[in-house]
Length: 330
Image (cartoon, rainbow, N blue to C red):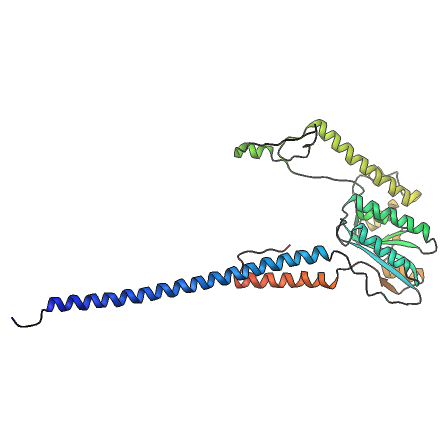
């Protein structure tokens, strides 16, 4: 009767054991919460750093849009200048009118330039930019009659690229080069049936009868199709007339496909009068008597190269580390 109350003791011990277990659980939860907060803070930091870097990269690209024409020797004793028309012909690109014309002017301003070769490797692009370059090359030929300006097509000289080539005194290419594509194109998509199926109501407000004639969510109106085709035909006719002015009676216009937009090999282009022969840049320079080639083409500035290359490397590293879930540079 004077013994210990075993039931009371067991209750106290159970309560103490439960308390220790809850304290342990609490510590684990707090530790995990702290770790999650730390991880979240670092995640926010790295994402913020990534956005800052991307904005800085964008600023570098926009602010440093000018291209570098450096690396040209002061004296050569006589050389053939090379001006490249490479890639898509568009405003702001290396093959833009501003870039190509500036390179051409730099080449002609050099006291040792004896000939100029437009080295072309482009699928074409803007008819406006191509026309600007065409007109400037023709103007410079008149201003510098003693300096021949020829064109050499590498893999491709099509559409707007051939437009530019036609401004040269002579055009050469490889037998397997793709040449021509004298035509104009505009393409798009129509989604009017898709939005009907999905149940989307199209709301558009315009002032002007044909202001929305390129709207992909509306069916093509026959009258507007005719108007747009007339516009394309006008640009095409300008293209044809400039090619005729540049090539003259060398063109074989008995072929009714000549201005159809078809592309030809270099060998076929010789027969059609689209080019004057099969030669590389080096071969032509040797024939001109000035085998030394000096490249006056526009290039990305060192900062632009650094930003582009560094940006790709950082992006890949961030993706591998899982700092950013998805990042794609194209």
